[in-house]
Image 1 (cartoon, rainbow, N blue to C red):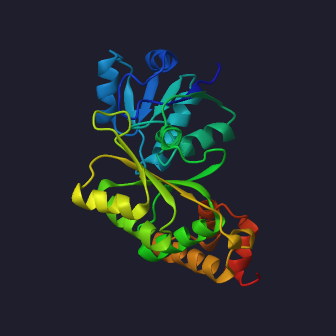
Image 2: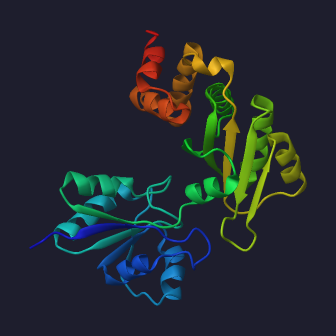
Image 3: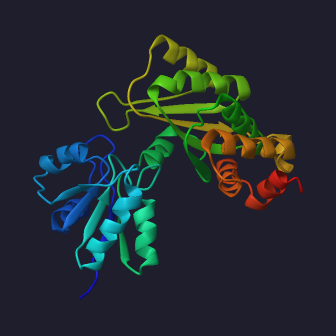
Length: 279
């Protein structure tokens, strides 16, 4: 008996019309849909009269549920993986079951569509020939400031997710650490109250102090490379970032090195050497 296939299906980030015909066909034809929040996904499925069985798959049950989904696939049944909005695995649950499927020789089929990251960068007007996505902006002010200082040194376009209740404070931090950078806030993308504003961080911070934001936010920033950007990253700063990731996020040194290297877009070997005191 042939094994089932795991379909990684992108769903709308707001406007329910932003779903492909292929995605709808897949959601109708698979044997099971694994959704981050079944109650949320039910709205989408009901809208398109899709009655496929749903099961939950989120950050709190990924470890146990991955084995269950693998068993379904190995039993010859197809599974569609979806998230609350956008593409699964992009700062959302999903990569673990996709990785496990690959490790077990199962077919993984991407069904592309909406993505908040790609929608935001396309509408921002910031340089997009190369950019880095960092997930959610760090919560600890010291780590956040250090990352901003390093990004300002390296230059380029960088993208973060941020919650509305933290947006103003984050923009104020941008204004302190990198006042000359260009920042775009893309809020409530594809929804009724969609807003895309591009200003200096201080101007944006003032705006949102006066008019508190609502809804999901994507923050994009372009840093003009400084003369120091051609130099190697500051060793002491890298060591501090690794230590902060270990203390604040509970990461092992190895995972902290990987996290810092990914955030700053610098070679992992440089971060490792700094953390070990060998740089």
